Amino acid sequence: GDLPLILGIETSCDETGVGLVRGCELLSDEVASSVDQHARFGGVVPEVASRAHLEAMTPTVRRALDKAGVTLADVDAVAVTAGPGLAGALLVGVSAAKAYAMALGKPLYGVNHLVGHVAVDQLEHGPLPKPSIALLVSGGHTSLLLVRDLATGVQSLGDTVDDAAGEAYDKVARLLGLPYPGGPPIDRAAREGSAKAIRFPRGKWGDGTYDFSFSGLKTAVARWVEDSARDGRSLPVSDIAAGFQESVVDVLTRKAVDACLEHGVEHLVISGGVAANSRLRALAEERCADAGVTLRVPRPRLCTDNGAMIAALGAEVVAADLPPSTLRLATDTSLP
Ligand code: KG4
Ligand code: ZN
Image (cartoon, rainbow, N blue to C red):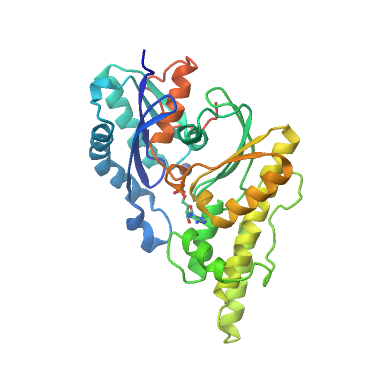
């Protein structure tokens, strides 16, 4: 018969995401974002996000069901982001998922948000080759994962030791007087500038790990801004944007491709909000081609936080016959 219908719920940060999926088939993907409420703070305010999730949850589930042309009674299992994320925000999604699972008498699965970012690629490009390496870059995370199996075998190879890549874009945009979120305006400004005009430091370059660091880069930009102001010079915004961006994507793509080569992996997935970056995509394509690695990047809409990614991972977990979570499911950040 039909593959099970999975309802996915995501509330780890500022997007209330609800998706419906069967296997690798995407039926609906509805997102309500509180990003506008955080803009004036230059970053996500946890309490504001939690409250927005609470208000958006029921209408977003309703819209996702309507778009997919199904009813709650058709749902076979409920998957929810258990972590990592903002504790209060996660709690809203986990509580809602428990309520739906209990009311429907259907199994509940708490899943890992990072692995969801990888699983979502299956909705666009079909089953993920095993093994794959995944580079996850967003406002909240910068992770390299070795994915042997989405449901049962994901290993973290490295992480940021300070800011996430998207967070670095957001902070640098603020320094340059560009709007929040900072990724898109820096991406645009960088196209007007020269990446060679200013050479910024490359955090943790060639240190033999798969970890990342962006705080030194941010400080270097801050120094440029201060020096220009002190000397009464106008700020070369486009050149700073281009130089900053080159430093970020140079390290990200180098370490991701190195991980593929070291582990003999031929497939790289790049996901998360920063995967929309034009220079990251271009350099990743170039370096993957040189290394004989196939690059998979989901469309931007699937790269940012959404419920379909959680449903996609839920489908894998159900297919792997893993035991469901109980109603005691707590927010949790462990990898499968
Ligand atoms: O995945 P996402 O929507 O939310 C989470 O943080 O989980 O990612 C948002 C991040 C923001 O930091 C934003 O500045 C960044 O992704 N971003 C970009 C671009 N578009 C969004 N960063 C660089 N270049 C872009 N084109
Ligand atoms: Zn995310």
